[in-house]
Length: 272
Length: 339
Image 1 (spheres, rainbow over the protein chains, first blue to last red):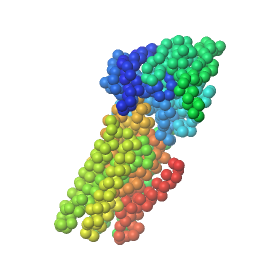
Image 2 (image 1 turned 90 degrees about the vertical axis):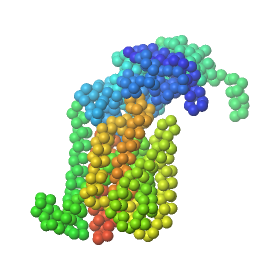
Image 3 (image 1 turned 120 degrees about the horizontal axis):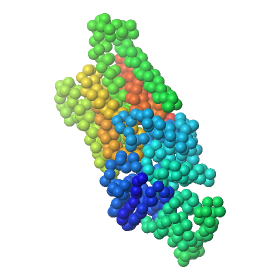
Image 4 (image 1 turned 135 degrees about the vertical axis):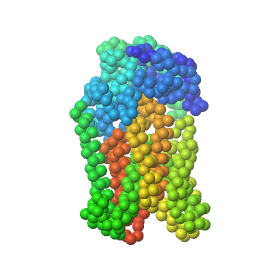
């Protein structure tokens, strides 16, 4: 198990502060979803936890060690990240891309060992992509592509997986397929999953732990029932939401919602 | 695991075919020229049974030149493959790093300041000029990297700054070139258009170590190129020190193309086209792409050299012009296809 946490994390783009003094603990072996409005800094936090961005102040701890001083290769053996809408060079086959996941474990000229082959094969089977191994990535559908990227992250063999909006541009069925795959990986491989996700109902359905953000600060964190409340969603999204219990999953669901009409919104509405 | 072996086998097969083409074209090139030597006589001479004149033509003129073409072609092909990987842009070539412009400017400066006054310097200049070109290439690349730096170097900024620096060097080059006497102007023009003018064994020795050292080093770095090609975020996530690896790879590319340009002049398009063709043949995985780019580059340059030497014989067309004439339509085709 690998623990991930942040301490007094501050992140800025140039002069603009995005996040200030963030203390976040990711529960081990669980699925954590991060929700929040556009521009609230959720992707930025994920990227900083994955050492893609450097924090202005504060520290990210992985396994008790400060992440920005650790060897990036060693970190890659413990934590994998999937950015939003990643792109593969055209002509690359599914097998080749997934084998790139072995990068942090390789040395020298990067010849794949027998073990590498087995792990890549396993990752392809887990994601149901084994039959597509020699297809070029661009010949796949959006959902299949996302599964290939997840397979690549699996081949990295990490205990921790960070995903930035893994369901963007996918249709309803494929969104669910990807999320169910991640849920299964969490249960079977015991890997900790952290994902930024837009769809509130998906976030609540698949999370053990939810973090609601606004303007770079945590408004509320806890179990889905604690976070998916009328009160929290009002603070986070400025919406008036109707929350019920999903009869199938028992998780909280946002039935319908309205914009809360503050003075400002009324004025802009009139102006239109 | 058999299913993976297929791709490996296919790539090796394709590369062997290109290697075979290279050997055939080398052989053809050896027997073509102002003095024709029949294929049988070429074999005889190689085996040590040729006449003195045949030995002279083959061993002292044609063979070193062909080996240089082979080395330059391979070097520029690999340099292009590196740059396209690092820049994540399939339209990048050694030109964007200012290699050609920088080297060209250095050569023009050299001819302008030193040679015009002392025509007797001829012999010396043959060996000093490549050195100047090499330094010029490094200086230009250094400038581009420094100017593109802003808490790290992003591929896009590298390309944009590269275009700017290239234009500046090209303009400065014209200013000096216009002030030259006609003789020097001709020499500079021939150099700039890319001509394999170093045609003896000493130039082979000057180029060989670079190519022999740097191509295997690039192969060693192939897996870094693979992940850099996925973009900075993924490369970092996979554990590559992106900034450092990019710098090392750029340095390798400058070393390779700088040493090639020093002997072969400003050969345009080869670094762009060779990796492209290679990618179509073996795909973008660099463990295959790099050797394939080297082979394709070498093959194109040998063919271009053969055409350049024989089309208007006894006068020669600079090989760079032949490559451009062959490469430009392909480049336009590429642009049309990407749209």
